[in-house]
Image (cartoon, rainbow, N blue to C red; front, side, top):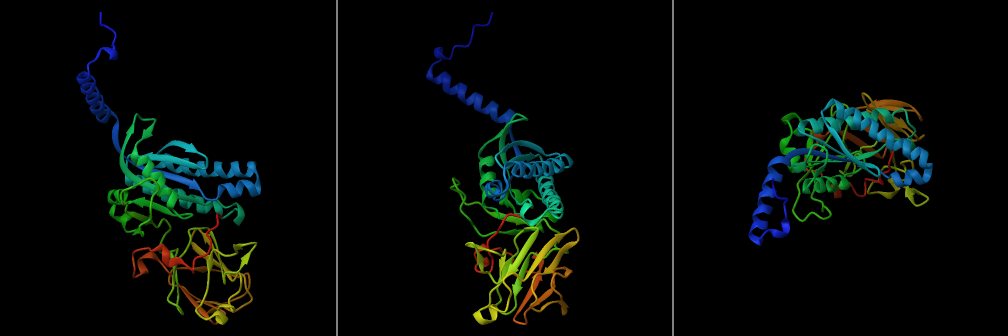
Length: 335
């Protein structure tokens, strides 16, 4: 009969040897490389406070339903949820990136039938690295790093680590741009970060360039974007993108709320909000008129400002330096 295991009877040397043996066995049986992703609803606390618990819970459920639908198609697994976020993992980095891009596109499609104030906005972070997993639990430093990456993302943005980027298929890497370095809370080593452009670059511009000043503005990844000269209402900007010129007098010719970009399946639609002259590729628009807007479009506002809308591969500078967005980029609001 086998004697019961008595750790108290072990010598120090035997304990150290046992610890080494168990550590090796833990690594051999449970350590795997995996693609990880964290998603988080933007400004959910404000949404709950403004619209109540029932509406907030419905928004959370929409987030999870859209996410899980895409996980099934790409062999992903929902590991857990916490608050307004979700943690998922995949065996393949390419499958993870495809799934997260499909999730964000599905979210955008769902938002098209929702009022601006009730549109879902989510930030996403992805990482590839070693984890300990028994098929249910997933733990390790890679999990913490992925969560930190997600926390730095802008609304609607898909951020990934350099390790994740290296694992992507070539056609997926083309859709990525390197980001300026940002500190990650609790992470002491330098982490290279990228953004993946999940919208079709042939249909959706990612930047606009103000011809008169040369300023380049990265468009927020929201499904309704409001543009204007940047005045505030109750202490907050009324626009997502603030349009200013070096000449303050010229800037005042731009309306407080001049136009909107609305995400649609085939690309953006521009809707004018102003009686001031607005020309899209030389065609004058009436107030409340809607027209398709594609990359390469030129928009003339009040005869004082010309905006050129460009796709990522049209931008000469591939590095996205987020400090360049100020003062042109206004407050990013959850849709």
